[in-house]
Image 1 (cartoon, rainbow, N blue to C red):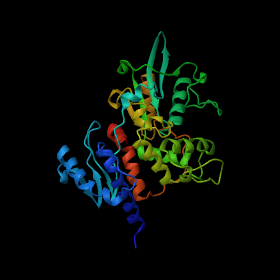
Image 2: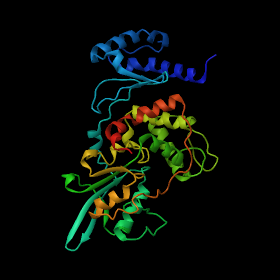
Image 3: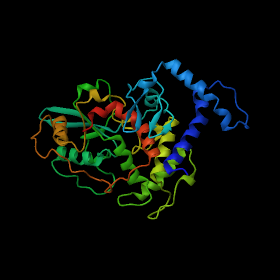
Image 4: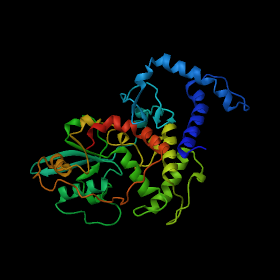
Length: 353
């Protein structure tokens, strides 16, 4: 009898066999509808030889092995080497390259603010950016305190992490990125895997403290539509209207969306972080790139915005957090999460605490 893990591995491998000819041999004549899975097995030796000979990849260097878990070696973000994501015998197809330049041409703008502080006859201008589920509410609260000297006094919409008249023109959404480095700047990031699973718990799961049922009602159908998955992949929540997802369906949807190169259409809570703050300026061009949990995050924000800091109360008190411990993911779910967050780790992983 097969264990659950073995069954998952066999299922993924069979799907891999079915899809490889379409991905890597696009000029193969169309097969008749009577083509069976067994006939597709003949493609595997051809594909193997083509990949190894084309990219000249030494097999012993393609993967590193650690504690029975096989994972791809880190490659530059612009690498054209095809690779498979392998975790404990689960194999996933390599995700296709996402055209960031094409995404820029859609006119989407990062959630960045131009912040202005007057000091006598001079005005200090800076840039502050944070993504959804990175601690943007905490960042907005701290920024408001720095600018106005008191806590955010409102409890209704528009909220502290939104551009509104409540900021009295001192912090406005910016579209200016030319000569970006002339301004001091602050970008907030979060561990990509932690962020996506936090988004799951607060926006799409079926029940639990901290889940926003109104957002879930809107966001779950959006995810299913982008992934082209049936509503049968979802469930009915016990604590509100609409549909909900479990971890497996959620990560399957995200993986399919990335596979179709549609991640640019994701809601900000699921949008890869490098398509937000770092869309027009790489991490190296920002004065500060940090997490909300950094021991000196708020003092760094003061330095960027005011040009000075007293060095007190530098640690932020997180706002709007989802209070629940994440569950251990299945092998296939871990592999999908690895695949869809890999680009983010390559771009700004060295800046994580």
